[in-house]
Structure formats: C-alpha cells, structure tokens
Amino acid sequence: MPEKAFSNKVRVRVNGLLVENRKLLLVKFRHPTREGSIWMPPGGGVDFGEPMEDALQREFIEETGIEVNVDGLRYVHEFIEPPLHALEFYYDCRKTGGALRLGSDPELSKDNQLLEDVRFVPLAGLAELPVIPEHIQRHFEEEFSKGKCIPKVIRS
Image (cartoon, rainbow, N blue to C red; front, side):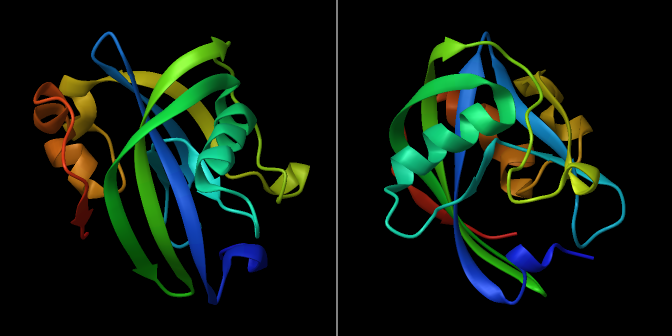
C-alpha cells in the first residue's frame, strides 16, 4: 500500500538522467502500488516553493550521494495509478561530485524505506530490467545516442 504522504493528490516530481560510459544511473525500489521492485532514474517530489532544479539536486544527493548539474528537460511523464498521480519531469544531468551510495527517503520511516539498490546500468541492458517509465526502457538508448532532444510528453 502506498505511503499516505504520496497518496490521493497530484504530486510534481523531478527525475534525473545521468549517463556515464553509456550506463544510466537507476534506483531500484519497492513499488508502492505493484508487487515487486522496479528501477527508475533518481528523483522525487518538489517541495512547495522549491525550484525544480534544486529539488532534483537534493533528491540526487538523498538517493545516490551524487551531486549533479541539471541540464535540459528531456521528458514529461504523467503517472496515474490510483491512489498515486504524478507529473514527472525528466532532466539530463551531469555529475559534479559525490560518491555513489544507496541513500534513503527522508519522508519515510527507517523501517518503511522503498529504496533497495542504486547502480549504473548499461544502456543496452535497460530492456532486461523492469524500468519505469517504460519509454526509458524501450527508447532511451536510441534517443541518448542522438544527443539533445526537444522535450516530449511520454505516456505509459
């Protein structure tokens, strides 16, 4: 069952697409509305009054220990899976510091954390994992190879 802090309201989320050596940084977490775990780019909710780029930098440090600069917007994704509803903004990012480690979600108690793992996954291996949103699983490798893109709305 999803954490009450995330349920029955529209959330604005930011996620970062950090690629190093043709590997995408992903976080594995226990999905709040489905059985099992999923992988997705690091990110989380934007606090009231917090610029989205600042929120993304904060979320990266909380979840992965990595400091980033936020580059251009690549995707906008609307996630609706009641009781969850989120507008997610996916940005290209560049590492500026820090060291990779599995972090935590400060909104959740220590015994109810969703984060399970963090790692760089080869772009060619994205199709082998349950990556959300599925667009990243199916199309990110090709789109990344083309370089910068015009932001687009993706649907699951």
